Length: 231
Image (cartoon, rainbow, N blue to C red; front, top):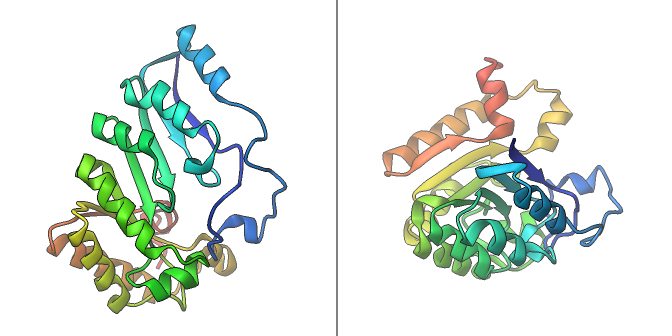
């Protein structure tokens, strides 16, 4: 049986984040390179993937993918799979809301900011208020299944003032889970010779979030060097 599937076969997005890999690894992929739902249904109908398999959906921005709602309905709303969705939160998805409410879908929203000004600088689109509205809609369905992400970007949002405003948004939006990361492009640039300042900053952020009652954990990029003891 297959019990873990990741779908990231396109790079189309409705934002232009400064840290996106497409900025330094250009891709010609579009939103509809090929359809994946027929293949997923084949795996499901023939018992190749099991009930409660993990299905990770990314991109690109998954919510603008043409099959997004159908995939969520087929595998999320009916409770078949444990779904993980990474999104910028700009576009509201009814299927995502229903799947979160079902309790088998977790969503990670990369807000990365506590102010409209910083959001625009990072995402290069003016959609801050729209994202905040969608965060509240998703948490209204099932708060523990919504995670807000804060990616530390050197020289942009690498300060406690911005993070404290981020935490205020989390509280006002009934967010319970937070994850902290650091920009992957920065790690590539310094070849993991990370300035100790960022470890100290991440620790301060995590401690403050936990102190305020959030469940906070480190995400992929920053977790790896911390685990290896790189300081």
